[in-house]
Image 1 (cartoon, chains in turn brown, orange):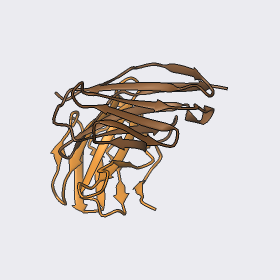
Image 2 (tube, rainbow over the protein chains, first blue to last red; image 1 turned 90 degrees about the vertical axis):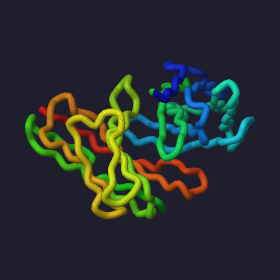
Image 3 (cartoon, rainbow over the protein chains, first blue to last red; image 1 turned 120 degrees about the vertical axis):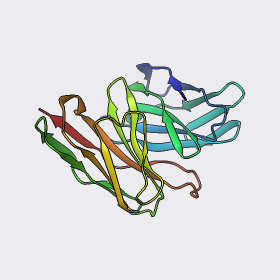
Amino acid sequence: QKEVEQNSGPLSVPEGAIASLNCTYSDRGSQSFFWYRQYSGKSPELIMFIYSNGDKEDGRFTAQLNKASQYVSLLIRDSQPSDSATYLCAFLTGNQFYFGTGTSLTVIP
Amino acid sequence: DVKVTQSSRYLVKRTGEKVFLECVQDMDHENMFWYRQDPGLGLRLIYFSYDVKMKEKGDIPEGYSVSREKKERFSLILESASTNQTSMYLCASSSPGQDTGELFFGEGSRLTVL
């Protein structure tokens, strides 16, 4: 059984702070890793993907992957109220995606 | 702009009714998926399809069936709806040959079974 575990939250951070979201996965054969953002009542949208060990930065978002530890994280710098959402971690093995249950983030103005 | 379109955003059905949820993608993706999403349980895979006329069971196929007669269309069928099938249903598609291999989601269909 392939599993993805996320810090369940909810997580609250003040505006301007760094939000840190974490995820571990069970399948060492996983190829790619994704972070999706889901606003309440909306469908998930991709914000980051990473497939190599190390850091990947895109604007205020940084994804970090450590395959040896089977760990992936998402850092959101200078958090904004518009970042308030549920963040889903997912990994891809073959053609199948496996999702965590999500971490709810609230950014307090 | 890439798109996955689900036919109905909100549906209310009665126990025992047959329910069709339609999904169409315009990206020529090979892979299509149906998930349901419930609070605290995350996204659970119902069925997926890698090609026309083929289907594979996901983690929770009981009470559901699917149809993929054309590459762009993947339908989810509830033969006899039950109250425990009240949920948000998400269709998604992906292509292995694509840069990121990401999943693209439709807007979701919120089904209530009374």
